[in-house]
Image 1 (spheres, rainbow, N blue to C red):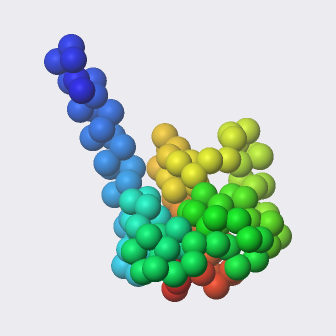
Image 2: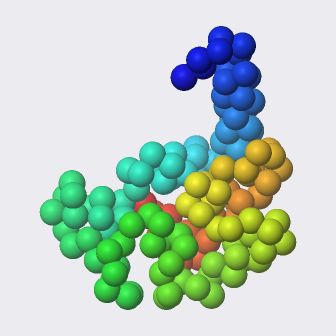
Length: 131
């Protein structure tokens, strides 16, 4: 990947690893495990359960395919509980995406804040244990 051998890619990756380490240190072991499952797309949402466990992959609330993105951004049933996350993205003037929700910001502080909001959101909708 680093075609010009200047080390720029390595420095960028090292900085990102340091940010991720800080985010994980702020979480409990259980929350960190759940965050990693979301980031690696191995969370127990409908599509994952359909693929690996043979269960239905549909959202129980809105009859759409339940992906991580659907659960975190699009599900109409949890729109009220998502208010704090939406407010955060509006204040930062950033478009909401799954990447940004799971710690895609360049700043440690913003990543810690959004990850904290995501964990709170999953707790409020009682899905943290399911994932």
